[in-house]
Length: 296
Image 1 (cartoon, helix red, strand yellow):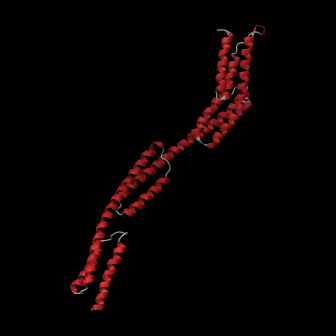
Image 2 (cartoon, rainbow, N blue to C red):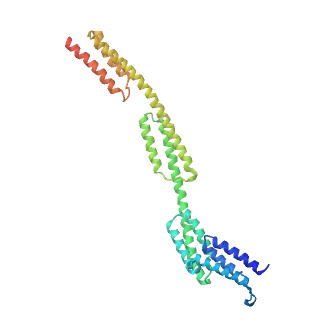
Image 3 (cartoon, one colour):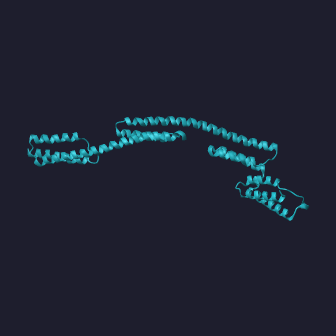
């Protein structure tokens, strides 16, 4: 292969490096291309050879400028990598930090060499920070595993308690208990991605079972209240008839008293209607006995 063909290939690769975002890494690889640049004796170099060399050197300068002095200066670059590693260590963000540490290691590999003594010194410092980070990470996840296990046990206990709500006959009491368990659930931390959703679905199923029982209860009560309203309206109608007649016979007085007993037997007609119905009925009965005292 001709020298100029090789140079053309190296220039094409240099153009690719200029387009890369990581200028520091690109610059380090460009220096390798420069070492591979074919050279000829000055007296044998043609005008075309000179133009290619000038083009390559100009591209090398452009890439060096993009990378910045900090990327060219190996010792300064490595010191910067160490500083970045220490920042990652201080944040305790282990998921993101792990990826960042991997990237810093790659950056270190491409940062170049100074001399063995200085390189070893900087590497030992960088390596110590990385080791401390991963030790903290391992400790964190070991503790997290214990925390997940404890939270799982707490949530399983709450699920068991949620099942017991079905045995509470009083709907209001059962509702209060269900709400208390929900508040307790909110305070319990995660049991881990593997178990959290399944535990929540179990807890939710028990709450759903209670809500269905509650809704059925209130539907039944609504129907019962409607029947009681009609029964009490019928009692009021009878009381009105006795008031209108007002014969005050023993049978009629006893019948009025019986209406009071029937009223109690019917039971509560619900918050919406009970007071209004009672006031009407009680007013009629009181009026009847007032009239009786007046006429007898």
